[in-house]
Image (cartoon, one colour):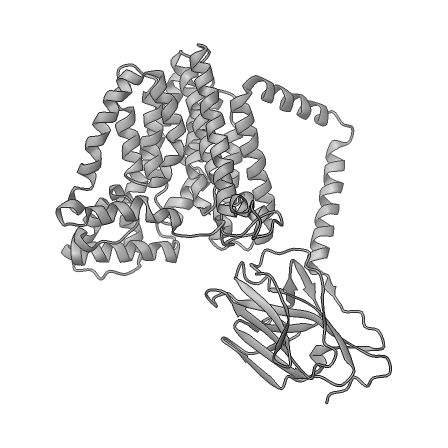
Length: 574
């Protein structure tokens, strides 16, 4: 799988960082990863220099940057193997868990196929949780967890679990924490020596928090359902006015952080309660199983609720679930569900044309996350309720037939709605604006399209297709000279569905006066309603669409634009 092309954008980061390290060393390095993996890129840069190879995206670059991923995956297999040797209850359990670890499609797509490194930092975090349950080795739990943080900051999602680990044997872990403090300057030593230590820390742990500013970056989570992909995280949710007192709490960024905080605080307090009442498992297998399930819950909540998640950020939950399955017989459902969701999400981002499935995968992710959280907080009750529910459903007569009929009917209806072309119904005193020739038109990219999008596709706004309208690109102006007798203009304006997101404002001007202005459109709007603008007495009509930030992906449409005339007027071209 190393011979797959990989993801060009991410491989471009490796190429640029290897080039920086090979040319200038650590002193001018501006990558936003912690130093753990950067040290390997430095070795790669030295190898490139020694072999006199050009710094470019190539199969060799992908191969060399993936060697640590290969080693981490092999180490993960070894860990699972050792757990299964001790805890497997049957040959079936042993071989299923081993196969799901060694040939896990999500891990293979993320690393060898894509070219990413998400497996590497999770392995020391997993080892930290496991050895915390062994008296002889638990002092190394926090140094191992610190190592994972020094490879990728995303491992902060496991901090509530490590808080539970600390409380279980705080005297031992206090010593381990002191050992961890020695790792930090050691890891940053090359950058410190070259005078770039503070900047390297800021890039890896501070500035990275505000790097993207999007609700989701291809991650099938709650934000696909609420806002769509790549919408700015400053969007105010649930129709609350941006000027409202409550607006700051309900921006996507803060709302997601609040949901995540409530979740992990609830999980942590639940564990504290078990510890305080002596109900937390003391036996090694049961304690490790419990801690791993807390880790799965934290990682899934991290992916599901927080904004700016990438499709790959569910990988830590997948890996923790593999260990949980190995140590807890009969619990194969969670790793299978997380593997399926992660695999599908990665395939969508790698080019499989299935963006319409994003909401479905997102609902599955949300349901899986809520189930895991519920089972953490109410382990017996949650499992019993869901088991009883499935048993009752499974005994329904002709269940398979009903599922098939409902699934086919729903799919047919959904696909029909997405394929149906909406045509404007005109009365005798109405005429489509597309029948008039613009007297002036300009846009920042491409050419004005009539009855099709800027890319030549059918006009599609808000998930619906339309027969007539203008496809243009921000920033654009389309001017018309109106016949006498025009009274109203009706239309729907939005970002075309051929792009994922943009930040656009629409305006209608008449005789150099603004008649109407839209709220900001991001491309995730659904059920857009027709807008009616009074144009009585207007001679020169202007349709304008402006980007609020970058013009990239600013594909916008004015669909079903209809002019209404006074009865008896002659709606002809002036």
